[in-house]
Length: 132
View: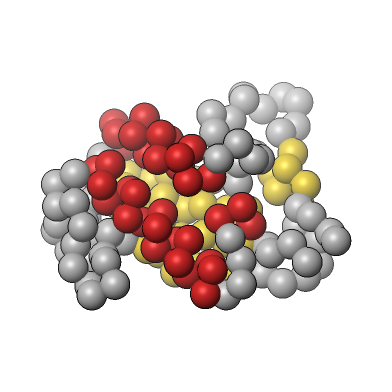
């Protein structure tokens, strides 16, 4: 069984809940499209509520990965697109709730003006490398 190696090189500031470099051995890679706070019927969950929307996004990521035979623990990279970067503490709390105590994926968080709909506050895409 090959696994990804999570590396925080000396000379870089400590990552707050993320890893600077993730080395992925040759194998299967999954690219998960950006997930927003839609439920299975396409309704927005948690209108105006950053925590509720972030939780729904992670439920959707879990569902997408499980549909491909993987899990949240296989994520090696997250790209976050948020409407309000000042809510980073909430994003981190929810991430910890869903990812547990394992190594943290490489991560990028970008504040943006808008998403595809005005009532959406966050979108997260993922890259996963399932363990064999």
